[in-house]
Length: 343
Image (cartoon, one colour):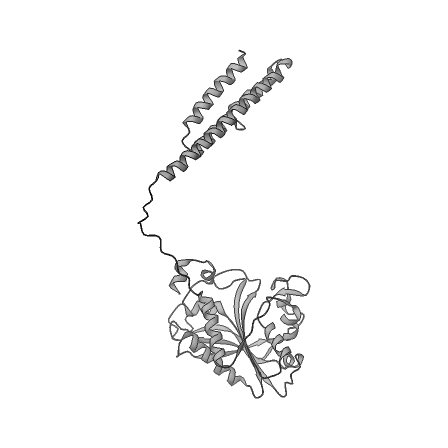
């Protein structure tokens, strides 16, 4: 027997012993690396082929390859044996069929969904229709028909999710207001809930996908007092019978006059002694106002004959205050314990 053959025979014996002593897959992989790995013992032997006479090198390479094939076969055999023993061990465990099973989890309506359902139910009781629409809309319905000028920041790529030059994920559910007015003559009374998308950085108060609730009423003789009455009733439905509402002057291209809408903090009752409202006693809900005459004209309505109001509130913003949640990301974490608390 040549010196190389003896060396390979001894190597295979040591490899066989090491593989046989492996107690699990991890131990077996360590054996593989030590003998067959890039820096293993077989690699060291291969590097010595260059020192052999030229005529002996082919046979030396074949002997090494045969030894490697044998070791790999033994490795596969040992791995199969370990897997079989693990399965047998699992099957040997006794299963107590009388042991109580884990109780099934019962789902519940998501808090944001609950806010949307309660808000829509309030408006339906007052004769409003709930309308739903596509989440991908042309820029006409998102901006042009809403009296939003071409240079408005909301049209920029860093504020909205554009699909192509004219289509984008809707940043609000306002397109349904335009679509409804195009299809129907006044009076119009609708509420439009749904998903919206904006390029907002995700933090404790913002998500890039959120839910919005918008309302629209157009008819003869509609004035700002009707808007105040409906939104006061909505807040009392969502938060409690003692809620008050205030309107702060603001600007939106699609309403005139426009206002930001606040309601008394449901946690401290408007006293300003809690952290939820930052000590102000008020929480912001969203924007509202009288429908701009340009919007009415563009859908074929006569602003000298009919008037209307509209509003848009974030459902997550309402849910934060309604359920006293400190971080909007909790609503999308799918934590069963958290959702069960609010069920």
